Image (cartoon, rainbow over all chains, first blue to last red; front, side, top):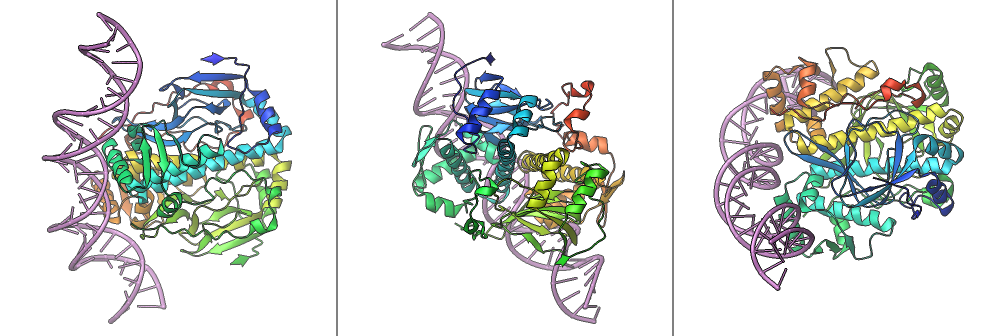
Length: 260
Length: 260
DNA sequence: CGTGATGTTGATTATAATCAAGGTCTGTGG
DNA sequence: CCACAGACCTTGATTATAATCAACATCACG
């Protein structure tokens, strides 16, 4: 699985870094893993001894139980980083599995630590990546408990669309989604049958269009209002010094959910 | 709500820090908030401009929707830190509300940043705190989707017990839980009626004892096996240099869930 | 002593899981 | 080129589960 590919592609930690820092990160990569769908990259119980930078592909961070049920806690996609715990010990609490063919760059902990020590903005971007993942998982938590099946799917699709746009993986109308309905169900905590029926309803109501694995939104604003999508959920990385005073005012985002 | 209390108690960021670093943190506190149950400490949309150190009390990080439903994403308890995003901008995506009377120390971002810049271990402990919260929320995610109501409650009670023990808030047999059954339901994604019946079953089966707000476990090992509790979930903070080589072997924790 | 929050229980209803069957699509080998 | 297998999608019928509704009990507190 080890591939000493010399052709290093753009790697932007989901838009957090400028070209200079990207070059630094790229120079620190020790090797690139090539995985096919179903491959397990990290198993529960493994110790994180390196950071993983997703360069292409979708991965699932998931838990299987004895009864054959599975929960996908979150998705990693190009630009995401996981395992970047430089200064303390961590054993994986979840499996990380390739959903699509994937390329993952590996940076040894010591190398990344040295880089972060000398480049505070890189360290900040790693922190930001962790907080971002926390917010995504927290939002999934809300999805799983207080949203209807249709709204769960809508919010999830909005999440994917926003994240992909940040890394050039989606256009204005929609994106390619490499998940099966079973996997959507494992993300939303519902059965494949419920996913199928909810998607049918959403199509019938004209909210989304589905053509094979292509997803398109008919009216983004309407959908955002429906699921009370928080525009700050996927804010880009903004180093604290870049903020002008007027941006620092209290945001007036209203946390209300439109009932249907 | 501002109280310039000069009597600073032990603050240990859930066991992460030694006395020297605790003293540093305490010296950086600008003031202490005193809150009563129901008070909102942070509202969705607020910008995090300071770090909050919980010195006493339980807080809920939660989302309300228009339909009157609420999801408590996670609980903050003594020793926990939130809002410690030193180097980038973050708007709160959830409300943070006091469940019990609470004391929360506030450290200005600039002050904490200076402290972390000069004390790498303090910065590491802050990172660790974020990763720990991520893992707790991820586990709640699993709870909400693939565990039965009884197992959700058992896992949640185990979580509280482990976390409280790390900060001296629980004994070997059990602990005081300041949550109503409604709040347990808002954590587990089920109605108050379901919580009531599940707790009744757990008591009848002899797995837990409940006397008012006192929770006791009858057979911890049995309960841990039932919910496949991962012993690494609440590992203490271990700086990477402290690890001996034999501890760095791959953990053999088996990720299986006992069915009932 | 009364009021409001919380806990408890039975009856009914809503929702989604499960079961079952068939359809579509794609890649493979004869 | 066609037959077949396997993965995935779709739909109707039935069953399991938890939500909701309703009523009452208990407790703390002013």
